[in-house]
Length: 157
Image (cartoon, rainbow, N blue to C red; front, side, top):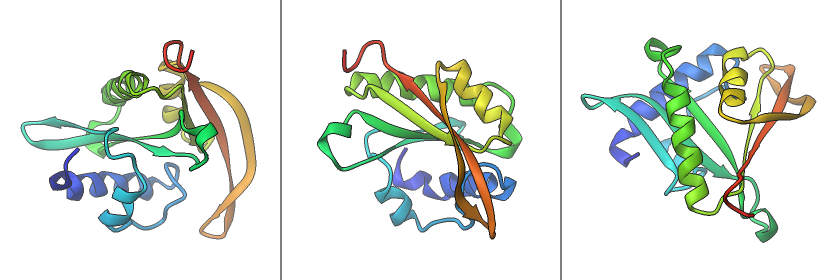
């Protein structure tokens, strides 16, 4: 993912925001804020003839050294490209890349209503480790999330 992909990345993120079931975000962030909150060397776009149709990126979960091998994953696919296996390809790729850089745990918080995201993560080896009730408000309504994680069998062993 390059800075030149920022417009497409944020547009795809907006499409996720618009579903109401992809993120607690209700507005598209400025690129500088999005950029600052995601690891620079672990973010990728899926393209076809220079058209970005999906992205995946990792974020640190803590600045404490003990959590250095744990990151949160975000994967978003453009509306017109959902359901074609692209999310699976992106997620599998970032799993391999994250392990090569020593990350031993990927985690994701997913709204329970987002069945396709839950199934995608499970298909890629994530398991449900918890259910967070009333973890945050969205448009004045409390929302729950399902906490999933994938432990590496390579990194951190």
